[in-house]
Image 1 (cartoon, helix red, strand yellow):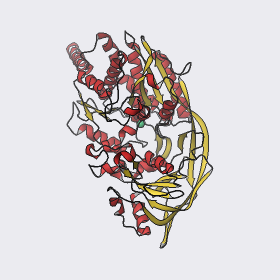
Image 2 (cartoon, protein in one colour):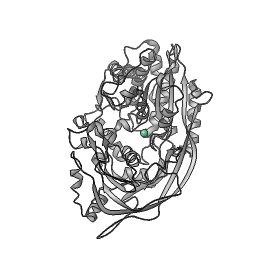
Image 3 (cartoon, protein in one colour):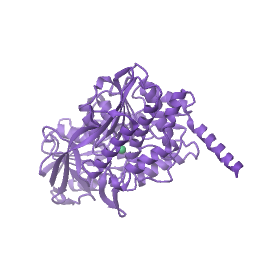
Image 4 (tube, protein in one colour):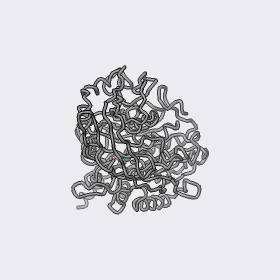
Length: 546
Ligand SMILES: [Zn+2]
């Protein structure tokens, strides 16, 4: 009995020694590092992702509970309010719930096409108005809907789309041709993002814009579009109530687009032609009609900000960010309507709390200040970070870096760690050193054509010039075979991501999450004790902003 107990004790210690990873850090640091552990991460995730928090949608009781919990936790940890005397930063938003008055009707010379909401198309609006409509709006196929002088590409060349409805393809030409855009590295540019396409259509004066969905270039299936658009949408409040946006913004299924081209008498090979330079937009000779009734509600959501003041350079800031919000209560799937968002992004917020704990336990306080930001409205279009970047609590110029967490590792330790947008900034070099201390190495994202660097909050910090680090889980499992990590990542994307089944799961191996958060801690500790400002690398689209 005693021997067995000793044996168990020994193996536990041996495992702990293997897990500690950071062999070269000082003793002080290792005390702090050990504060980051799997039980604490699991505890915070299980609270934030519980049904009681109702999927943490802004403006709901889920927001109240989340703010209360995070404020309590940051106080327990001993941090100061990040926004003067408050842990909260108000983010004025507007919620728009759009319901179509009928089908999307597309009329041509030979007949009419009636498309059913959610099954065949989705539509919404950013205009804060009781009703928006397009009525017999001429339709034009405008390729990718991109104006990119630096790539010598203009889908709107010599085209007047005022009052018209443009139909465009998702992603950018580099997805199909390695000589175009960033095709060589299969990296999606911002021009490939649907958010850009809506912005550009508005600049061109279009009344409506519909994006043709396609699984591969979009990197997600129609159910993701459908569930995202079937719920009320949030936006930041703006002075013009978003009247500069197109009245109708939406998506068509691939099937609907083919029916549209058929009605227009245009071969659907036009979508292939649009992938080549020199393509000219094609008027479709058909019109679109659709009206949306909107219920709008202005309200205030909140970012949560907690500060650990620096000991020497307290007017310089390192931000750790993670969005606290998720999708709330939505369309039921197999009887479950609560979108818990356990990995997306209760895990990132748990990481944030663990980082705060670790920093507060450092024997020597960091020289620079650390701001822990739990952001709102990420799922609604990166709104909390957009608001912070436009209304920073601390000056952008004095902000050294943003380190962002969104969906952490749940499948155990890995030999590598992914850097999304690898090659963008000097932060890669800090990350490489921190990874090396753990006996690991950096890899670029496996699917750069998904545009992942534009899909979480660090993007809004990058847009104002703050170097941003956005790591993803590793790809090579330490304890399992080579398919383990990619299979788990794929299964998450297929069966859990943005569905009611992103739930806390006892089968998760949290050792990988622990190691990844410790890795981010190391990066932050190094940055916090330096006086250098990391820069964007040559060729980064954000370099000119710093
Ligand atoms: Zn997320």
